[in-house]
Length: 177
Image (tube, rainbow, N blue to C red; front, side, top):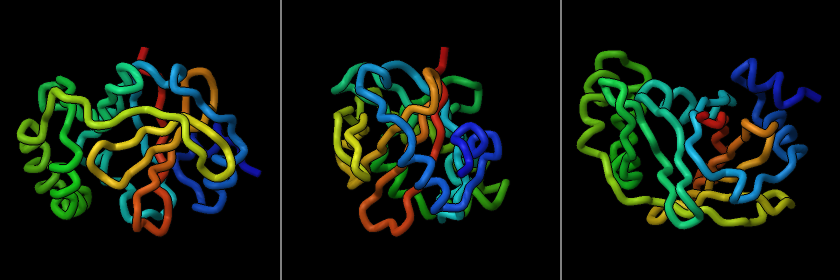
């Protein structure tokens, strides 16, 4: 079986292989997740592959268990913007096109400041997913849970569990030091 490190280095995996690696990893706890994390996508053939990276996704920020910024993006001048997930997901059709067309990607990135928020939009709890209890980011107003498993002390493999999505969306978080 492929190791998590090999899969992360490649940046892609077969969906079944990614699930097998995810299932073999140790759970993360909520204290482990505190802080800011830089994100990267793990391409598995999911319809969302490439979407976040193309639109400037930076990662996630966990202030404490009740204050989580699930979508942190890099603004045009490098500043970090915490986005309102409902607004972002409402514009997902545009974002999906943006991921494939560079001109629209630039327009979408110009719109990011309109989507920002100061309030946290998620919380962090321990939940069971695929037979293990692990840290889970629960969006406040969307049917999405992001579940985390430890790769090492500074890396987690995440799975976005979106109600209605047939295949989970995988991503990697690296601790931002």
